[in-house]
Each structure stands twice: as structure tokens, then as C-alpha cells.
Length: 479
Image 1 (cartoon, rainbow, N blue to C red):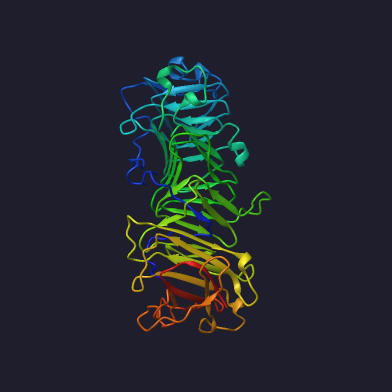
Image 2: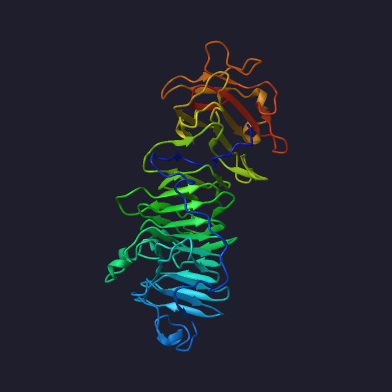
């Protein structure tokens, strides 16, 4: 299989991508410029932290220059600067609406449940910057942009606490707090996370808010709930590393479906022995992007968009089910030997597939179809709108752990296809010398001895890969 293609991979039940979801480029948040020096914005009234009151409470006016604490009526003018090594805490009931905020490298801002901080300045000219530590138990957001170059965390450790009812990144504070001035009600906004490796707990994206990963995020065993119009965008070369079983799920009704836009990498690791870790992360928002999904060992990432449509793949892109091992910058499906006899399946769309005619693909194991003599478990490899021909076919790779073969090689394994549920299984014959099926056949097993044909995998302990070149898809098994 051509490893140069961008790949969509993982142990997935692939039901993805609705029409009308904005693309990552056309609908994405503009890339953030590097932040300027701390507290360098001008043209606003500066509220600088001096700690002259109790030394920690946002609402204590003596802690601020001018002895006035920023509050709910300051969205037109206030610029908040927290410098030095200050630790500032917003308590329940504290709500501040400001133009912009700047938190210096050694400083900390703690937003308790029931508190909120929202920024309103033009994102292009007056972005807010958090260089130190931001802990959100309440809410932060607003229609402005917050550049996060420091650490970020929430106290939510499970999907249950995400829903009750904070923490939140929110575009519209009026959805969360009563009694705010009408001018405070807004939507949109974005937090751009540029930190190299950022840990956090669960959270919600509310009011059309965007969370843009321009670094690396590591969720705890918690989820991300997303309201209509909200986006989680993973930029190319950046990643979300999941070490628990937190899901990405829609909350609320109406408006455009929230979307996970993956142009980078979603990595799914085991959850470190957590008792609540079921080894599965479900993405049930809309999903799009040409990024990778890498799944370690026996975990799963289930992409289950509410449209109930299959994953959309363009020419040359691949989707599969099974474990994969990272090799350089590629994620290759493999059979890992730590936990028993393993197998995987991958489908690559034809190189002739038109970008405007995306193939709708599902790749998943079907243990209920297993019969005596089968190698492992049959796989459903199904695709609608597949533009495959004998000369430009789809490619299916079926990989089997060497211990499933009991000394056999790829040359001894036969591949069978079931055209539809309940039909007889039919053996797939070898391809002709030019790689095409024999007359009247729709598929063939590539046994030509080429580097991308059926083969043994060096250094794998005897793993075998069977390559099927096909114009049709259905159910497949090795025997």
C-alpha cells in the first residue's frame, strides 16, 4: 500500500461526516500570531494586579491598581494584566467582562465553579494571552481569542462532571449567567492552544466556541461536550492524546452540529489502569479532516456521527480496523503480539476516486460470521459510491498474526468473500500477471510477489498480509 497518502486509520466503527460541515480550511479559525510582550496592548483602561488586598481574590478591589476590580460592566474598556508570580482566584459569583486579559508566565488564574471571565476585543488586534497556568472550574471565553501558551486544566475527571454544568469554554456568557447587560451577549470566540504538551480534564464548548489545538492536548479520563456550532480543531502536525475513555459528544439541540476537525493526529492509549477505562473513546459529533487516528493495542476510537453515514474517503486515503504501530510519521496497522492472536483490515480507496465523489466506507470485524476453519474473525469491508475498476481497484489488506497461521505462509492462505448476508462464501482467485481479476471476476488476491502484494512481514514473528484488489466490497475472511 502506498504509504505516502494521508491516512485515516484506527480501530474504528466508521460512521462519519455529514454534508454541510465547514472544512478545516474554509471554516477554521485563523492561525494565531506569536503573542507580544506581556501586558503590551494599548488603548484600553489597564487593570493591573498588585495584590494589595487579600493577595488572591479577584473581587477584592484593593488587589488591583486603582482599587477597582474588573466586573460585569467593563467589556468596552478593561484590559486585565496579571504579572509576576501572582495566584488570582475568581470565586463563585465573580463574573468579569473585559476587552482582553494577559497572564504572565509565572502567574496563575483559577476560575472556580460559578465564576466566569469573558473577553471581547478584536481577535486580530487585541488577543488575550495566558502564558502561565489557567484552571477553569467555571467558564472562560467570549467572542475574542485567547492564546494559550502555558498550562490549562479543569477539575472535571469524568464525563459526568463535564455536564454539571461547568467547566466551559463559552462564546456567549448569557447562556451561563443571568442578569448580564444585553451588550454582553455574543457568540463565537476561540482558544488557541499552542503549548507543546497540555494536560486537562473534561470540559464543554458552548455558544459556538472553538478549541484549536496548535500544540498537544492530553485529556484525563473525561470527555468534551460540544454545543451546536462549536468546533474542536486539531491542526496539521499537532495532536490530541487520549489516555482514558473520554468521549467527544454533542450537547444541546438546534443549530449546526458541533464538529471535530482532525487535520493532525488523535492518539488513543490505554488509560493507565483506570477502573473506569473501557478502552473505547467515541466521537459522536460530526467529524471531518484528513488527519490520522492511531489506536494502541486493544483500545478503540469509534467515530459515530449522528448522520449514520459511513466515513468519507477520497482518492488514495485509507480506513481500517485493528491495532497499529507508529513507524516514523506513518501509522501502520499491525498485529501486536502482547495480548494474543491479532488481526486487522484496511481499505484504500482507488486512486481514481474523484474528490467530489467520496466513497462511504465501513471497516469492522464481524465475529458473528465466524465459521470453523476461518483465520480469526471475518471483516465487513463495505463501501458505497466506490469508483473502482479492474485497472484502478480498491485495495484491501487483511493481516494475520503469525500464531494464527500455525506455520503456514501467505502463499497457503486463501481469501473468501460473502457477497451479501446469508450468501455462500466464494474463494477469491489469484490476480493475473497485470494485477487484474480473471475474466468475469470482481476481485482477486495479489500474489505477484511485489512489495505491495501479499507477503510475509519481516520481523513480525510470521505475520502474513493478504492483498485483495477489488471493484466490489462485502465480507472477507482468510482460511
